[in-house]
Amino acid sequence: MARHGIANRAFPLVGPRLEQSWMIVNATTFRAEILLPDLAAATALAARIAPLLIRGDAVALWGELGAGKTTLARETLRALGVSEDVPSPTFTLVQTYETPRLAVAHYDWYRLKAARELDELGFGEALENGAVLVEWPQRAPEYLPDDTLHLRLSSEGEGRRVKITGPERWAVIA
Image (cartoon, rainbow, N blue to C red; front, side, top):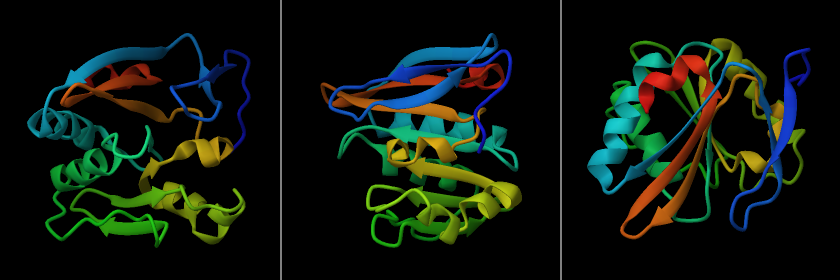
């Protein structure tokens, strides 16, 4: 995906112990930070994200091991009506789901050896045909669309802190 445009500027985003990554920031970028003290709060956030997902959307889930990336993806899929088991795609790299509203592909890029593997995994087609949820997006940030919703999860006591960045249309989830 190309990352260019007159109003866009790339800024490095560095999280605790995360590789440096990039995202596009422009005049209509939304930012928020929320605390998820428990699973119920994560489920509620997922329930706010799910109805806004449309074809071509990408949700990038950033965070260390155990930060809650898979849990948030799983709860988003459940909010979209997926009743089957939602395993982590750590070893398969991608799991696809047909929901009543749209197709959703859940990617885990942790084990990618090269970003070009995403072409073989059908990432572009998944975006064309539905929405994608991406764990470990720092492995190939250049593949993320400019209007990706970024959720940066970190541990906060017994809960999680989520830093949210994305297009203004996502402001209603905060």
